[in-house]
Image (tube, rainbow, N blue to C red; front, side, top):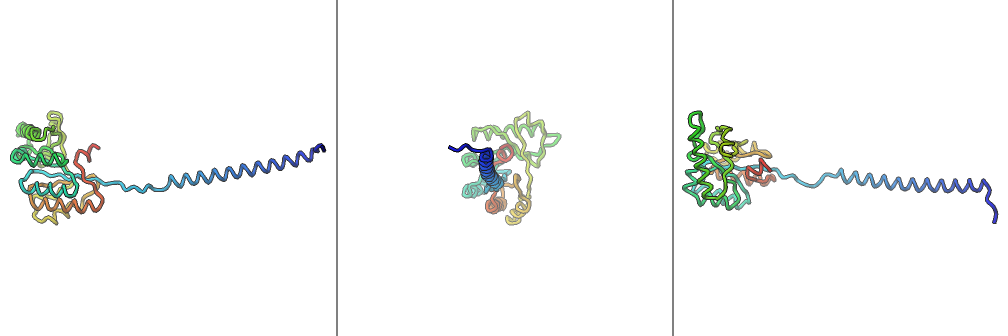
Length: 234
């Protein structure tokens, strides 16, 4: 067998070196292609639509006719709401309070007689909250944690004294002083946005009609209706 010369060894080494460079270049090319593919995958926007949430709230009820109509409409649409009821109306219509609870709505306190807190009536105001809590707890079996103080007048110290959390609002269409349901609905729809708390009243026919108009339009826009506790604390 012929012995290889130094020149032969150098030639073979050059071939092996060139082959190694080709293999390394091919591997690097594949690595770069994989990396670019991964980046493109990460950069692709997720095809997920974030649901916007809003809370529909009602004060002053329950009304023996209009609240029932409202509950029917909400049930048909698969919508839950929050009802801040007065103790005197809850006493008169416990069956409606129970229906609210059974259909997934949140029930809050709106004092017994719709009294407004002032500097001179704090103790009476507190007593009305306690009395209404007792009435509602007897009907539902649940502790009442949320209060909507009439006209928004509130004493923060009551939160610890009564273990209650006040819920105000971000949109008030003044539905209680209007009789045109379409105008009430438009007053809400012109302002509403994500995480808004809408103040309405279930003690008036026009308010109930307007509320369902609002629900229909906002559902078309992709809004989800939740109770205020879910909106504030979830």
